[in-house]
Every structure is written in structure tokens, then in C-alpha cells.
Length: 351
Ligand SMILES: Cc1cc2nc3c(=O)[nH]c(=O)nc-3n(C[C@H](O)[C@H](O)[C@H](O)COP(=O)(O)OP(=O)(O)OC[C@H]3O[C@@H](n4cnc5c(N)ncnc54)[C@H](O)[C@@H]3O)c2cc1C
Image (tube, rainbow, N blue to C red; front, side):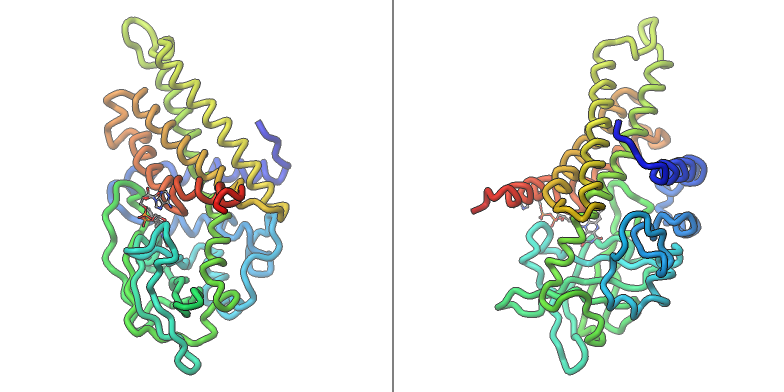
């Protein structure tokens, strides 16, 4: 087990207590009703979980990283950034399109400069959080120059004329999370709504995804750990053929493999997070981490369902929900296959 600093241990304690006392109790109902819990999200803000990497002057906790967002964001400091850190507002990230997922070079949403405004036309899909009533806008990656393959990240506030948000998409899991299609029809926003370096919007977004990969791996690690704990406790008390099922070698085989996967997941997640926090190159390790931890969690959740038997297939059993929720993790923020591709590229294998 890796060592954490006193501060990290204390954050872990607060997070664990919050998850057990405030998040877990309503999780089954949120899954059933598909309702996003705004109150709970605000609690995340109050506890400092949302602004953890943001400088204190913006209302963040400044846990490890000093500077995070580019200066232009100062423009939306009071209307977007600060409320977002308090859990009272959010934004969403628009990269994926119906014909451009893994292959970002197929992005067709166009941004054309017309005087001092961008005019945007196109469509995005599978966008998380766009339809929430507290969502202030989308940071959309748009093609600005087809020949030179230049892209921009442009912030489009919710409610801008021509920006339409489709109905919620029905999903296999993550029911309380909002997922939408977005449509841009001659949307006009001021030129200063472009973030980051001109023409480098796609590269900037892909860079941010590196950290997102460690975050999604952390979520999966927590879920896998919970699956292991629940399945171990169940196996010790569920009796078949006159003894607890934990005594059967085939069940032990599943539980020990789950324990190994959780242990290795923690090591690889901590390693890539430390590289990131130290400002060292971390792209290859973040992809290794995302690939390993999300696939391991998928297997752990699958085995947990198996150990719970018929009960594991029932909606009321938490591991059935974890199994469905984890399934998205090997797809979102770059599929497992794309992580392997990134690693091959970082190893100089692509020529
Ligand atoms: C719950 C959820 C939330 C999401 N939220 C967001 C969001 O907020 N914002 C956003 O922009 N996107 C979001 N996405 C979209 C997500 O990032 C894409 O679904 C993902 O990148 C894959 O793209 P795709 O669906 O087009 O699949 P494709 O790119 O069409 O891939 C299909 C299959 O082909 C494989 N494949 C593709 N290219 C290669 C290759 N070169 N080598 C080997 N295999 C390959 C893939 O691994 C996959 O198995 C979300 C997705 C989900 C499921």
C-alpha cells in the first residue's frame, strides 16, 4: 500500500465519510429515477472537492497545483468559475461528434470568425452535464481552419441563440448523470470566448484529458474497492452446501483476483497522479493507468455480481449498479484501445 501525506489522508477520510453518509444512501433512488442531485453536488463544492486543483484566490482548495485555468477564464470568474467551485454551477466539455469520437480529426463543428464574433455551426454528442439547470455553457472544440487543421476551444453560454440542447439520452448506467446531444445553428459568441492558444484547441483539450484519465481511474478504483468489500462480506456469510461460500476455492479465486486488481490499481493510479502533481511528463502513465484501472474495475464488478449470485443481478443490489456504471469507464475519456494507441505513440512505435 502506498503512503499518503497527512493532508491527503485527511482528504481521504472526509471523502470516505461523505460517500458513506451522504452519497450512498440515495444512490439507488437516483439510479432508479435518473435524477441529478443538485444538493449533493453543492455539498461537494462546500467540502472543496470540486475546486481541489484550483488556486485559493478563485475559491479552490489548492491541494497540490497552483495554476490551472488560462487567464481568459478571469472573464467568467464571478459568473462561472467561482459558482462552479461552490457546486452551484457547472460547465460541460464538447469534443465528441456523431462521426468523430476516437478520431478527433473528423470534427466538423465549424467556427468562423466574422468581425469580432465567432459563428459556430455543428453538432456534439454524448455530452455530460449539458442539460443540467446549473450548466452555464459548453466548451466546444471547433474546426477553424480545415487546410491547416486548426481547432479552437470556444465557450458557448447556455441560452445563446442557436445553441440547442437535445433531450436526455437513455443509458445503460450512470442514470443520475445527464448526457445530451448539442446543436449549433449560426451561434454567435464574441471572439474573446476562445480559450487557450489560437489553433491549438484540440491539442489543449487532449492535454486536459490526460488528467481526466487519472480522475476516471480514481472513480473506478473506489467502485472496485467497494465491490471487493461487499463481495468479501457476502461470501463470508452466505452459506451453501453447509459452509460459507468464501470457503470454496473457486470463490476464493475470484476474491483474491479482485484484491490483486484493487491493489495494483491503487499503485498505478498513485504513480501517475504523483507524476502529474510533480509537473513531470505523465501522458504515457496516465493512459496506462486509465487502461489498467478501468478494465480491472470492470472485471472486479463482474466477479462481484457473480459472487452475489441471483441477488447480484437485482437492481436493489449495489454491485449490479456498479457493474453498469463502470461499463462506461472503458469508453469515455478515450477507449481502452485508444489508450494503447497513446502508449504506442509515446513509446515511439508509430513511426
Ligand atoms: C457516459 C459517457 C459520457 C461521455 N461524456 C462525454 C463528454 O462529456 N464530452 C465528450 O466530448 N464526449 C463524451 N463522451 C464520448 C466519449 O468520449 C466517446 O464515446 C469515446 O471517445 C469513443 O468515441 P465513439 O463513441 O465515437 O467510438 P468510436 O471512436 O467510433 O470507437 C468505436 C470502437 O472502435 C475502436 N477504435 C476506434 N479507433 C481505433 C483505433 N485507432 N485503434 C483501435 N480501435 C479503435 C474503439 O476503441 C471502440 O471500441 C462520453 C461517452 C460516454 C459513454
